[in-house]
Amino acid sequence: GFALDSNNFAPVGGALGALFVVLGTLSAAFATDAINSIMPPMPAWLENALKSMTTGSFWVNFICVSIMAPFFEEWLCRGLILRGLLYRSKLKPVWAIVISAAIFALIHMNPWQAIPAFILGVLFGYVYYKTGSLKLTMLMHFANNTMSLVAAQIPALKDADNWVDILGKERYWLYFVLALVVLGLVILAFERIKPK
Image 1 (cartoon, rainbow, N blue to C red):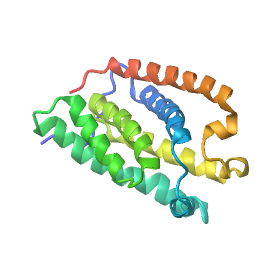
Image 2 (cartoon, rainbow, N blue to C red):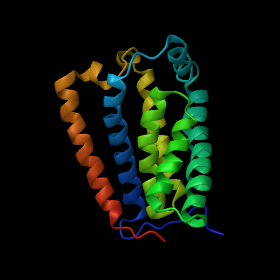
Image 3 (cartoon, rainbow, N blue to C red):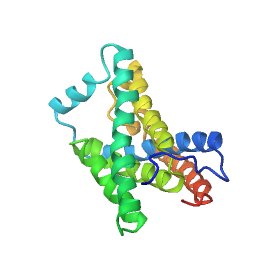
Image 4 (spheres, rainbow, N blue to C red):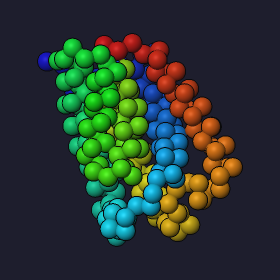
């Protein structure tokens, strides 16, 4: 069959590629917060359920949220589903990426997580398509989840619903544009990689 993981990083390189995907993921996650800022408030039961994943023992949460979730979700959504769609179907790569991102969004089971998960899933899928590297997509997922976990530990950020609440509208939109520029540069760097 087809390799689950590869190291197709040329001409970007593995170390630089890893740095780029972390920057791209954090930029995309920051930018998707604009969507959550216009959504209706999350129901209290869901908010409490999500907060329970970031309270209690930091190390238990870190293992579950930052290690296990990225490993299993990437193995499923990029390693099995996207890889299967790319190499065993007649779908164009863009549709394979969109379908795997949609499944990634659906497993989050609520719109407050699913919409950003879809957008991040498209980015993760694009990186997997270009590099074939499950290691990179796991790193991306790790960076996103760990950022959320660490932010939940900072008292000033605990009760904020989104970055707009923390930064104010003007500063948020300035950083939003900066995040899109960083994301665009990362995508341009990965455009140089020829998929296998």
